[in-house]
Amino acid sequence: MSVQNKRTKKDPSQMRHGYTTGSCATAMTKAALQGLVTGRVPEEVTIYLPIGQYATFKVSAFEEVEGGIMCETIKDAGDDPDATHKARIQSTVFYSKEKGIHLDGGIGVGRVTKAGLPVPVGQAAINPVPRKMILGVAQEGIEHYQINRGIDVVISVPDGEEIAKKTLNGRLGILGGISILGTRGTVVPFSSSAYMASIEQAISVAKEAGCQHLVITTGGRSEKYALKQYPHLPEEAFIEMGDFIGFTLKHIARQKIPQVSLVGMMGKFSKLARGVMMVHSKSAPISFEFLAELANRVGVDEETQQEILQANTASQVGEILQGNEAYFESLCKNCCYYALNHMQADIKVSTSIYAMNGDCLGKAENIDKLDENDWYRG
Image (cartoon, rainbow, N blue to C red; front, side, top):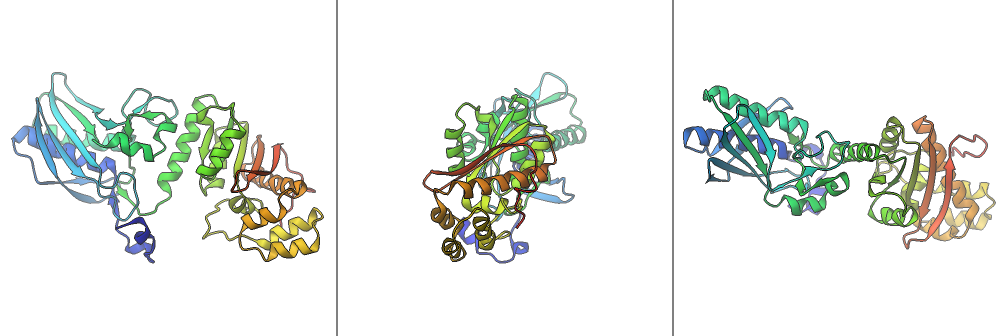
């Protein structure tokens, strides 16, 4: 099923849930350990998920390797357009000379190179919940089969390095492959939780890297403009927040970052300028009345105000008023004031708004306090 077809489904409750890479790796660890001990690899295994339910996974392939057994399953992300959908998730289990359970990542599982993530630097990018799940089924197997020796568990994703190019792993300092993720065990179609978690992690990585100034953007195009505007800042300082402006600002405030710059386009920032902190197109329509009244406040003539009211998009309003420095400065200041009000923190805020062609329409820089006389609340 294509992403486009999935999006036409009207009732989200009818969409099929999938399973995380962590659940797949856990199930294949259970299967491989069983195969190692008994000499017979099961066709399928059942595990208990953090969400509080059981799930059964098919073993799509297995192989005897030197001193161990590898089991593989094909990840099913359900109706979610997940980058790891249909990825081959493998676990290879060996007997170890050392007592205990030793877990590591193999081919296609990234390794952490920057501080600030829930996994220490140098370790395989297997997040805490999947790590606990994998170690848990391994311990169950040791007890069930009364194994009195240690085991090594290696999680691999053969195409992981290629898949990782579609993720934020590189920016987060996870190199060489994907992360083994999941807190519930299941994937909820079109859930925002994974994206929000990546924002939170990116802010933590930036903080640990010593960044005192973060630049948050609404997407790839605005980030491209931001990189040109702030070429002196390190890669970690740039964070794509998507539609989650309020969520991102709150986490920046919690990390006590002293300076933040918001860089975006007219559409989403015209919403922020009137206090909207979740700027998805469906949840927050453009208010042309707000944009026209703001124009009135800076002395734009009535004929132009009527053009604004008749516009089809915020980008069109940007074109109508391009070159009017007072208007875009006012719009950017309003973004800064609402950001400061939302964060309630000692922080300097800047806002830059760009046109689709890359022209900077206007800026407001280093605003650190609310000005009730200048702040238009609509």
